[in-house]
Length: 562
Image 1 (cartoon, one colour):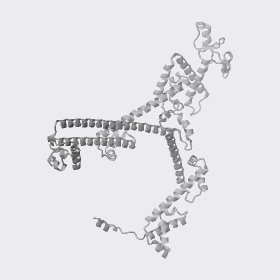
Image 2 (cartoon, rainbow, N blue to C red; image 1 turned 90 degrees about the vertical axis):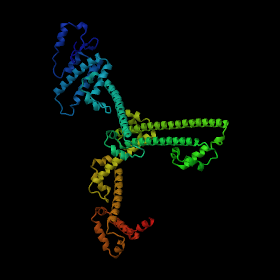
Image 3 (cartoon, rainbow, N blue to C red; image 1 turned 120 degrees about the horizontal axis):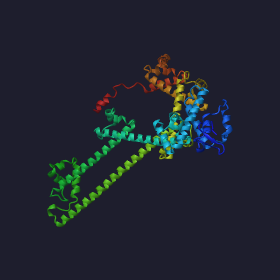
Image 4 (tube, one colour; image 1 turned 60 degrees about the vertical axis):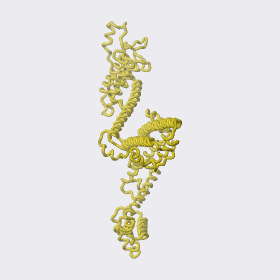
């Protein structure tokens, strides 16, 4: 019999199987051709009952039928998903959409049967690349980009998710690798800029930035701190090279000076520097040593190794001197080799240290990015947050950090979130008209409770009230500080003011009239007694200090020092 629920599907009631292709025994039969070409006419709304009379009940469907219906349902849902936000379509159009989805799924089912799985997976992955699916998004957010592509139906739902997850992981690693390569290239260009800038050990970063700030190689490094760090490393390397060059020059200077001493045949261990230096004063090798004390020190070092007068040495002394010379050469070579090894070891340690520091900085940056994306509640606990963070593929990049450091960074992130909430809450209080230094929480709550920033700060009214009191306390301290600045700026108040106030209250009233013109005086109107105390304390302080010294009081002292 023909299963009219699906076009071109033949059903065998005896074996309870459905097939797409006509079996060999049914080919070239006119009765079967006629049955396929003339479907029965059924009343609307009874199609479902009719289809179930001769066939299997829904619960007895074969695996092939279930897969086709499931995939067709997914295709229908995907095609209709883009139009869910619009006005609901008529029932006829929805029916047509379902029929077209069924047909598309049937074609896709045939393709899935004919094409190997690895080829279908590769085509699906190529589609993800072509549609520029983000590696840092989710399946639900990226679905609208790919759902209308014919390659979408090449895989089942489970296979799609598997290919998508693998694609996201690989693509994210590629993007990170590209970013690292690009950053390395930018650093190399910046290093070339440093080398071509003609810098020396006394160059400063501010001068360098002012001169090359518009150079593309300079601007490619986004963070000023990183530019300065690379500049400082380069200058440090220059200083090392200059130091090594000075040491080499000193070694050469000493060698030349010792050669000059060897040419003086009359020297022995009893020779005195004051008697010898005059005979060498005109030699270039002598003048090359700037310090006279250094010349004398090298002279004494040289003559201490001499045994007797050069004019009376015999063959044995000559051989002894040769052996000593050879021993000194070997000792010098050994010492030089040790120095080279120490220098090389130091350089290697520094390079390893820099590499480890770079890896550590990268891990910290990844972890901070992870916290920014996934932890947005300042009341979250480390244990709960860690479960969420571990599910993200970026967790592998931060496992090199110590547990204590991760907790410390997490705590700093929470403090930053709390500061942001606190700042927004204080902005709300600043923007609310009617709040004064004497306002109560009961009054202020009525003014701000409808603002969303109030609810976002905390669900606890006690916490909101506590922060409000801290806000008033800070405002009061700032207002008093501003008032003291106002008193210092008021020229009417002098060291004579206390005596004038004691003689006449009118002087105090005159001072208050001047102060009333300034907002810093008026803002303390809610605490007039405290304001008066601050004013009188300032007046008494001026009286205690007495008249200020004249501007030229320090001139005689300066002249005497000259």
